[in-house]
Every structure is written in structure tokens, then in C-alpha cells.
Amino acid sequence: METWRIIATGLLAAAGLPLVLVVMAKTRDRVNSSGQVAVSGAVTLTVLAVVAVLTLTVLPGVVTWIVVAAVAAAVSVMMLAS
Image (cartoon, rainbow, N blue to C red; front, side, top):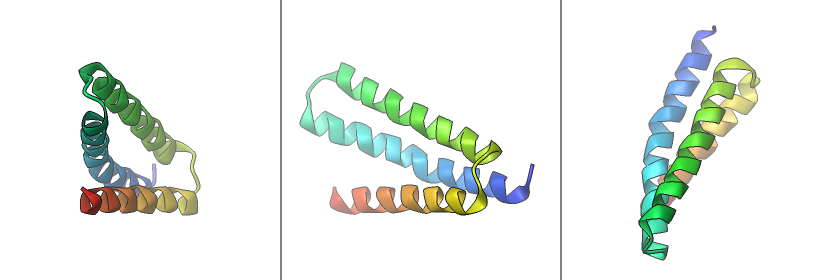
């Protein structure tokens, strides 16, 4: 396994975990249902895990870095917006 894939996956996880928390917080602000908050957190975490596995295994380099940059940008915008 190439080193750049491991670094990209680490960066994706570092940006993705706060993304899960922000999505859960925004869901809690919109809906007062703890079940809906848990579902949104589980869906976001599952998507993050699938993308991380794809990053480690099959995605080309350019696509991998675009995904990492997009997740980092989304977290930055969500943090600034709240």
C-alpha cells in the first residue's frame, strides 16, 4: 500500500470525524428527535467509512485528493457557518 494513500486516509478521517459531529448538531437544531440525530450520525459515519476504504484501495490519486479537499472544505464551511 502506498504511503500517500495512508496519509490521504488519515487526513480524510481527521476532517471527517468533526463532519459527523457537525451534521449531528445541525440535525439536532432542526429536529428535536434523538433518533433522527443518531440516524444522521450513523449514515454520515458509514459514508465516511466507505470513502475511506475506497481511498485506501481503488480510487486514483487525483480523485482521492479532491475528495479529501472537498471534505476539509465542507467541514470548514460548516464550522464557520455555525
